[in-house]
Length: 121
Image 1 (cartoon, one colour):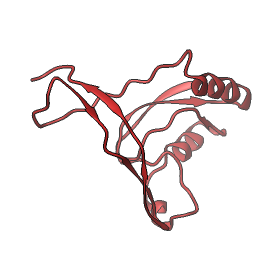
Image 2 (cartoon, helix red, strand yellow; image 1 turned 90 degrees about the vertical axis):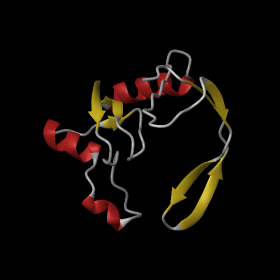
Image 3 (cartoon, rainbow, N blue to C red; image 1 turned 45 degrees about the vertical axis):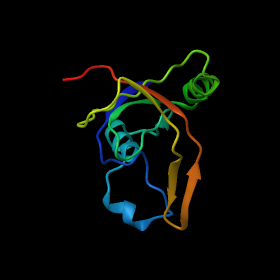
């Protein structure tokens, strides 16, 4: 497996649902072009996010890593955000996340996130 840094603005992969995506860069396509082989996504990030993404290089590794990732027993995820505005030391966000689909109206997805300020500058 490999871990790669996904730039903000890149798609994880292209879908056939939206032809506007053809102009955007895709992490999977770029890796397949550079490595000359198929790659398997284990973790994903939204196109507006940058960060580390776990990629398997063969189907067996993909199955094993995906099983570990889905079990959440040996895997922990941590997300950090740079915020340019004042925020309390700790807070809980309960607003639903919007799941956008270009062919449907926005769907609401329940969410509860505990957030903590790591550093203030």
